Image 1 (tube, rainbow, N blue to C red):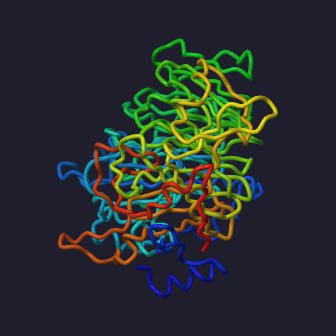
Image 2: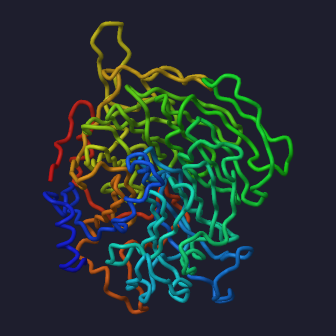
Image 3: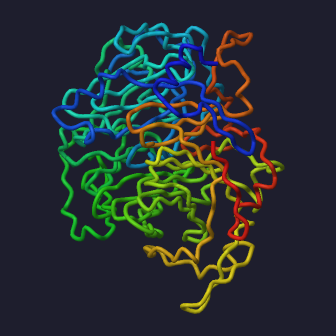
Length: 572
């Protein structure tokens, strides 16, 4: 557990906030806090800090480096090929991959095999972000947090009690605003970074840790100086189940498909977008060109993107308030829908690909069914914009094997109201409104939504926001103020929940089943860790590594989320 001195620091930085919150399955406790040097927020390239706070969090798990590889720092042309990991877009999804940013999640990550425990000497590292790093410390496996603030990308040891990062990477001419980690990068270039200038880099995370400097090393550069698109990168994501394909979304509503194996400095132009309000795809004329395609998604910024775990479907949300779901391989818009009010800021998939979550400026958490192609539930509980959503793919309801129609999903959301909300969703127990004459009162019936909704909408249809009285309502099972500053995202791991605020401070909340375990205690093999997991290949994750959870939940909460009987909210 965290030391008394670090607990004192936590209390000083978080006045009036509790270091725990209660859930039906037990108490989550604040274990560690991660942050950056305070001076980082004062350097802003001549712009106000408010303009530069696009804060995002990614968790990366590195496997142990194979003994056959040279222990020396890899060169620019030959970086480590042993990296297998999982990350969150964030949160997304996102990616995210979800990915976890002020403007939305960031894609999907997948499960990698093996254990993600830190070696003992790495877990006790106390290196400063400003000091030189020892290459020998970073040849083994480890768990890391990657986050950005203003003009610097920081890397922290997830399992260390140290608040400050162990590595900082400075960007001279622009600011990093989004990033994603590739679980199966065979060439070692596993970290994808998007800048405010539109530039994009791929690098080896292990190589960055081994290098003592404060600059990117061994980087591949794409869209250099905004040669293809000079608007801000809003989110980046690796495409699951592909070898080196990634996408970059921009603030002008365009998304580009890149191949890591191709030259990133090819001279390419795409035709002008004829109708900025319509979806369109343009392909490069040459097979050697990079990017290979441009997708015009919407008018205005793309705020978040998220891939389904199998990479078949891509979800986007934007400034125009629409969720759009695409068949990625067919380059086809399947369906979409409008928020109740304002922009949508974040989105993510369930690990089984059946449901999507969105959140935005209407203060609501919306649940979308892939099968029904509509909103099937919405959650009310935030008092301000919802800036991050995620499915807890580690949590399991009692007597649930994760199969069948009675699956219960645990959802999480954070907002600018500084609150973390947890929700439980049991689709077979939601009360579904029946169709009713215009102006009449709705009637409700329990059962599968598919028995009551209208016919499936045709491909390409963007639906208006439905009336709130026609959609089942969820109430949160937990509402807890976790930070002083507005929140920008959350991420679930096997043993904890990570929350991040707009100022770049990260809190790690340990689950009830792990709260009494000392994370610094070494096992017989000399390994330690709190964010560690034995990873399963069979259950892919959304926004984090997928591992079966052993959480217990009072069965009464399973039926308390329907329209007819809402649960009481636990405030702490």
